[in-house]
Every structure is written in structure tokens, then in C-alpha cells.
Length: 247
Image (cartoon, rainbow, N blue to C red):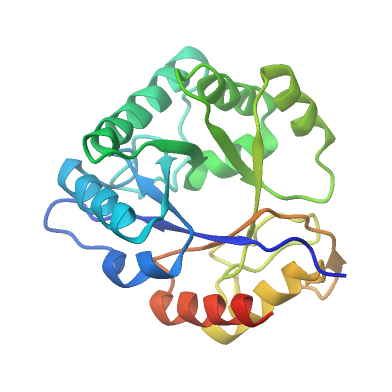
């Protein structure tokens, strides 16, 4: 049985000053939504502007890829930031990107936590509540991207309490654990090859995702993510786009 068609999203705009990351120009035409870094783990005003302009050109939806303030660690280090301080940080990053987007007659329509923050909200209900408060209190309706996991009733209930729409995400280019979480990047096989990622993308559309140990788990997703910093990312995304279109 096939699930409804998945949208394809990618982490974008992760360059900073003279330091370049990813192929925004090559990837943007291939995806449906761009998770644009907004100064936390990467990105700067000029990079955000360039990425927004590319999104406008290709009709790509714009999301704020919010993070701990950790450019040195690329947002992949845990930080003790929570409560109102975290909400303020999230609003600061959304505001930066949304301001640039509005100059180009675009707007931010969703937020997606990045790296350590993304993983932290999965295990800390108070952080999940903080992220939802930040999204729900923004002046315009925003959706929140969260990992599609097999057992997720508490997240659903919390979103209902905040009046917030969730967008469930699966990953094409990352291996999964038996709990439905992403296999840590320091583990062998954590990042998939382009062909493996294309095969996993199709498996997810058919609700037949297999973990790194071969266990099959249900993952009902709305959108499929590929990381722009994965080896061979542009080729991988092109392969996945073709596979999804053909399926």
C-alpha cells in the first residue's frame, strides 16, 4: 500500500562568509521545500538572501532551520538552553529569515530544528514544549517539522494543546535504529550511498522502512529529507527525485 506522495526537503543555505557548504544552486530546482539555516549553526544574511532568491525562482517553499547557536560545532553539540531563552533564540532566527524572505515577497511557512536540537526534543518533553511554544506564538501560522516515529501520541497531544500543525519527516539518506530514531553519525553505515538512499526513499513511500538491523518499522511521513552535506548530495537528491517521480 502506497502512502500519499511525499514532498522532498533539504537543509540549505549552510555556507557562512567565505566558507562554502553544499550546492544550493544545483539542489534547489530538485526539491519542494528548503530548510534554510538562519544564523544558528550556519548561514549569514547574504547566504540567506541568496537562498531565498533561489527558492523564489524555483517555487520552493521556505522553512527556518533553527538551531543552537553553535557555528563551530555546526549545531551538532548539545547545549543547556531551554525555556524562554530557547523560545527567544528560535524567534530571533525565524525573524532573521522571515525578514529577508518578505523583502523578496516570500515568507517562512514552517520551522525545523537542526542537529542536536532536533534530537534533544525527541527525548526531552520540556524542550519539545518550548519548540512548540515558539512556533505557536509566532505572529503567522507556522508548521513544525518533527521526526516521524512509530509511537508518537504524546507529541500529537502536545501539538493539539498548542493548536499547532505538525509535518512528519523521514530521512532518505540516514540509517535508522530499531526505535525509529536516526543511527548516530559515528556508527558505520549511518549515512547511506545515493543508491541506498533512493531505495530507502521508495521503501518509506511504501511504509516498508528497514532499520540498520533489518527490522521493519512503520513510518508515516509527510516529507522526506536529504542532507546537503552528505557525500554526493546533489547526485543523491537527483536520484531520489527521479525515483519518487517514477513511483
